[in-house]
Length: 308
Image 1 (cartoon, rainbow, N blue to C red):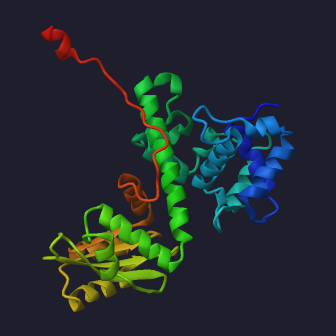
Image 2: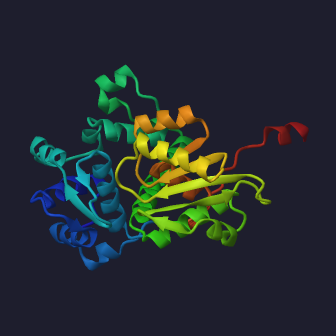
């Protein structure tokens, strides 16, 4: 049979994990391929870009959507497990689970809004199914933009998962390369020498704000999964004073609590970069990513024809 669409994989993926066991994505792929009786030719089918198999791509999107909806979790790298919400979803939808069914969850709604740039309204809350426009209602350019945003959102999630699985030394190198790509720290060698003090799954050090090093920034980067709270920010502020640094950047692979953000705002000279922002900086500055395809969208130059 042909490879099913990504939504067709959603409920079988939940059902596969309904025993509560954590499985690797390799095990998931093997089980779903067997369940749908996919042949070697089916599994070898590639996307039009030729970069990935259709099967791996569609299962990957099914997993991404279910994770964003809070029905699956990823307790370890390249692994998945079902959540209580996922078990409840299985009971509620005995035949098929679709993206529309996931719109009942605020986390998934927020994910959809982030990738489309839409604003949630009271009407959207009352009618979740109407908050996402069908492809037919979008212009080709809007469809392309929406797809681009969705791909970047998925890429950011994958980058963050990779960063959380790094060793302290690897994480230090990642932080150095992101900062240098952004224009801080001089060269990779300079920044690496300025940092280098690792501990507590993190990196601490001073980096240059300008090439001459006239102004210094104190940095703390934590490869954490737990939320960063106000006490860590206050401790960090004390470190700024100790190191005679006028500004500070606190990077984490997790998130900041509302209290931590308020504390940083009150102090005034501390920038907070959470895991999602770190991943997007990696995308924006080309760290840990490669360009597979480049598309140019051209428009008619009206001025050219007016001047003929």
